[in-house]
Length: 277
Ligand code: ATR
Image (tube, rainbow, N blue to C red; front, top):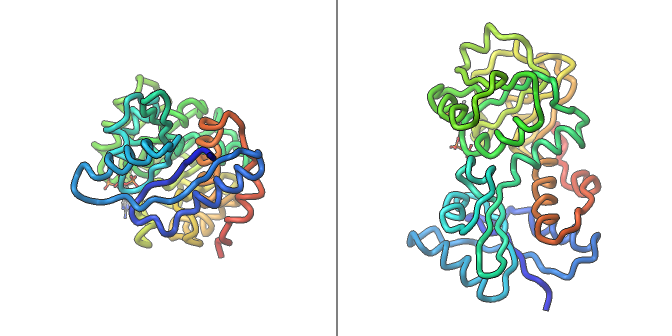
């Protein structure tokens, strides 16, 4: 019987994960299936029951998406360091009766920026907008990429400070509010990791933070030219990108973790790319 994998979320109708993993399996010749499961929202323990039923039926691993990333974290037996800082899990591996949990969102984002967009972060000035789950997942991989400066800006400054305070003291890493960005220098990379774009809103980021030769990255995927990307473009930024590459790269990380073979990502990113305008 083929090894079984699935993504679990609610809603789950729009997920691209079965398509992506199906193409990975085809390309690498792996004998596996990958489905989509709509997880139950209630009662409270129904999510864990659904995962355990999948394991009992021979499931080898799962991707986890909204709103279950915290529940997946809670039910895991082992968690990676980056999953622990994120407090959230986007991939699980089931082996020897244990649930091992990972979070590949941040690594996927860094790989997309550094490899696909050819923008290595080492020595660069990097600004991240937001301090929610997406940023918690990305923080350790961002620090590991060794930027010269890493600023986390959030409306709720205390939330950004608390997050920065959770990682080892590092002079290159600071937290601030949006108003303080007015008096800062330009950044080589600005990442919008707020949920503002999901509702068509613009974080109050001053256009002066963008550098024309730099990159503006929108975590949301397939939303076209969001207000954030439009602001960046109007500020003359040459490189603007949305999160399609991150989506495929985090999937590739999970696939390599499960199967021990790394799939190629470029053709799939091209296939899933929705033109920004
Ligand atoms: P996620 O898990 O997607 O990151 P979250 O944990 O709810 O979601 O966090 C949402 C992030 O988007 C927060 O940083 C939030 O800012 P606050 O913490 O100050 O609320 C940010 N956010 C949402 N809407 C925003 C907006 N219109 N402008 C700026 N930031 C916004």
